[in-house]
Amino acid sequence: SARFAAARILFNADDSKAVVLSRGEVLVIELTSGSFDIEVRFPLSLDVDVQVRPRDVALTPDGTYALVTVTGDDSLYVLDLEQESINIVPLSAAPTEMVVDPVADRSLFVYENLAVVDILEHDLFEIETVPLDEPMNQIQSLAGEALLYSTAGRKDAYVLELGAADYDELRLEN
Image 1 (tube, helix red, strand yellow):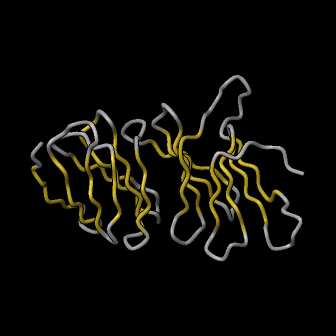
Image 2 (cartoon, rainbow, N blue to C red):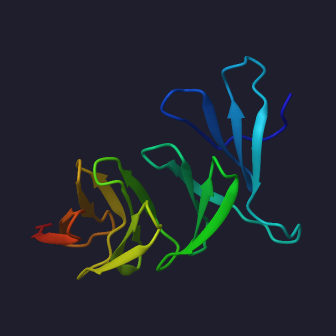
């Protein structure tokens, strides 16, 4: 039996693997044989004195990569589930929300106190940073577009077109 504390579990498209977010690591578990063996264990730190606390995890639309945000850190861990490697992509800050849009094949990141949205494309994992007038802390994916809004009393919302990284600003009343 595997010993880990699962904080979140995701399944790939054909349900043959589970990606498990645990304390300081991400596990890939094979599900088809019935033995539920750990195929890959991704430690998020190689230093036992450094505690890395994963905050959120999402799979890219093709299920090849797991994207892991870390509590209080601007690092995005990109785990290649097939090649069993880790790449760390710097974000603008520690994100408050992450959403993967399967239509645009991009991920979005917003920040509580930073007036930008980061858009990560999934081919080369490059970030495009789009400036906003106010910080947003929530994202709702809309099939190739995204609604960015705040639950912190801000007066703006944005409809972002992901293919063009262009947006319409919506002015909200209280």
